[in-house]
Every structure is written in structure tokens, then in C-alpha cells.
Image 1 (tube, one colour):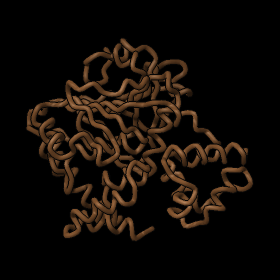
Image 2 (image 1 turned 30 degrees about the vertical axis):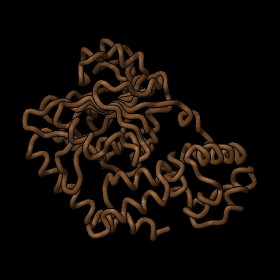
Image 3 (image 1 turned 45 degrees about the horizontal axis):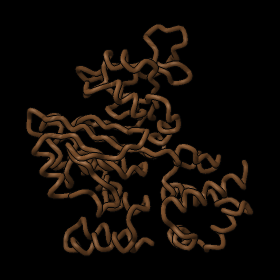
Image 4 (image 1 turned 180 degrees about the vertical axis):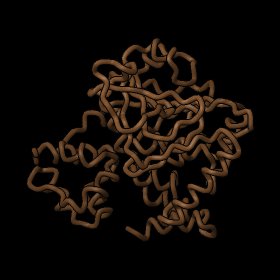
Length: 334
């Protein structure tokens, strides 16, 4: 392990997140002298601190210890395509205690993407505009239909309405972002649902046809998730298909996948029965863990998009309800 390289990575990510050495030290519960030693390559963080450090610096422990910050330096923009739903399920549909769009925006914010374009129907657009505005309060910028968004070279695209939940989710997203010239789709092992398309891949995670000589034999069947990463040019080639199909693969050519672990859950939200099931799942997780899932204020704060004072202001606004109390409890943890 190259101690100096790790130190430079910590310094780069700290500055990118907008922390001083003291800010970072205070959030972890150590002295700023310790942070200084890390960044000068004199010592390494204790293993007990790596989890929280990686969250604060918006990275994963593997990348941090290898000193790999190349993919963090790439400029990314987010694109959310929220098509009109025949049942009327849209951005404002509440999943237990928060609107669906909060979950979808959370995917981008987890990996530090601040510029997000949203393509949606009029009802969803009106809801987003009235509740989130341009996203500035959360440290992001939302571009709605017709507005000119970021021109960043790389794109993270979320299609439709799905709630994804699993441990260390950010790390898998970031792994998919490491190869900035590739078209990479997320996949996971799950029960097959009508209309789903399975996938096969080789040792390099390139998607291949069933029976291909380089196909990797897997214990479980893997299926596409409606989240992918690509260049702007690849997105233009894909066009307006709106979903991943054999036709879209033919257009792009080589497509790779980042495989999520067992235990991850993807819950489609296309019917009111789906809404009920997803709400019950989120309620169970939050009750068992004592935390809010996809709390945008918390994500923005932990990713350095807003300050502690801004987080406190969010909490004070709603201090009489459970959401505001949860936000204020985050500050007390410090």
C-alpha cells in the first residue's frame, strides 16, 4: 500500500467535498493533526475510521486505500427519465414517508452528482418545481424539461420508477463510473418478473450472448436494473428508446455490467400494489434501523453538498414532526 498516494487521495477528496482538515477531523472525532499526518503520507487512518471516512469523502474504502481518485475527477451529469404512468404514479407519489422523486434523486447525490436533468410528465414537473425548485437548497441543480442542463461528458441515467436498497450502494455505483469510456449498466440477482431480460457476461463484465465461449458461469440469474452510465455520445446513439432492449444493445455495441451483490433489492413502482409493497418495505427498514432511507438532507450533508448550519435549518423548519427531529438528531451525533 502506497501511504503517500493514499494521503494525496484523502487531501484531494477532502478539498473536493469542501472540508478543512479540522472540519473532517471534527466529523470523525479525531484531531486535525491526525488528518494532516494522513495527507502528508506519515500515517494511515485506523481501520475503524475507514467506513465513516469513505462516506464523508464520497468514495469507497477500496478506492481510498488504493489511492484511486481518477473516477472522482471525471465530470458527470445526471439524467432522470420519468415517463408518464397509466396509473398516475409520478414524482409526488408518496412511498411511506417521502415522495418517489426523493429516492430517484438520491441515486445521483450518493455519488456526488449535482447537475440533474429530469424528463417527466406535466404533473411530475409541477410537483418537482413546487417542492424542490431548482434543488439549490440541497446543494444540487435540477433542470426540468426544456431547460439547458450540464454539458458534462459522462452521464448517469435513471429510467422510470424503481427503489434500490442495499448496503454500500455508493461503492457499486462508483465502480460503474470508473471506466468513463464504457457503457455500463447495473445488474443484480433477483426473481424474474414478466418482461425482464436476463444477461450473461464474460470475466471483464462485458455482456455477451447466451452460450458465448467467454461467458462466465454464475450461480444466480442476473437482470438489468434501469440505471446505466455512459458518455454523452453513447447517450445520443441510444436515442429516445427510454429502456434497455436488444435494439438498444445493437445501437451501442459493447456494453458492460457492474454486478451488485445478493441482498440488494430493486422494487419497481409501476402499480398501486407496487406502491403499497415498497412503502411497507421502507417502513420496515426504517423501523428496524432507526434511520431514514433516502433522506435527501442527510445525503446532501454527508456528501458535503450542504453545511451543518444548512442541515440544522432544515431540521428547525420541521422540528415538530419526526422528519425534522431525525435531522436534528444527526447534528447531535457529531
